[in-house]
Length: 225
Image 1 (cartoon, rainbow, N blue to C red):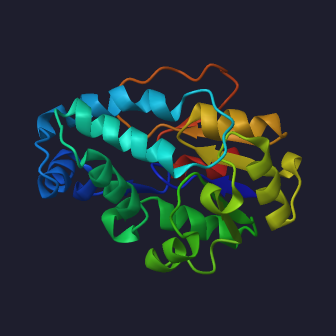
Image 2 (image 1 turned 45 degrees about the vertical axis):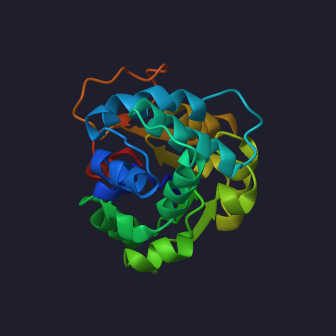
């Protein structure tokens, strides 16, 4: 079986969740956020998602992350938490996202080879709606979100539950995702293999373990299975 992370592995956010989009959200709440500061704001806020925690799904983690982005863009105001909450809520809507071009073909190839495909996502998006919106029905055998399961990657529980959902063993399974810590390390702890996706053309550090394959688009995946 092959399990995929969803956000930044299969889909990416459109303009709603870029600098101008955040500024537009802010304006509705009387918050002046400068879109020019969006890239560094995201980097500054990322530590919140990587804080040591018990990995129980908690919407407030993502709301704090979003608030930090707004603040790092210069946003201030008494309604900043309300604004961050709306952005978090809208993240669940598939209409704000685009699918990477390589995804449908690779999923069809895996299906043709008889490989079970699963999804494991740390988001609160309905994965049934995701499959329908992006016309992936029949290509996904099972899907599990941390909001439904209760634990987030890299907690072993969500990987074990996903393996059970597909009826496969860890030794038969590969996890594909863009986060070494959440996707790859979490999967390897339960005995799965991992493939790291680095779609960005920026220079990124090599994964801590040189034994983990790194691909820059999904077209390279089937040859690794």
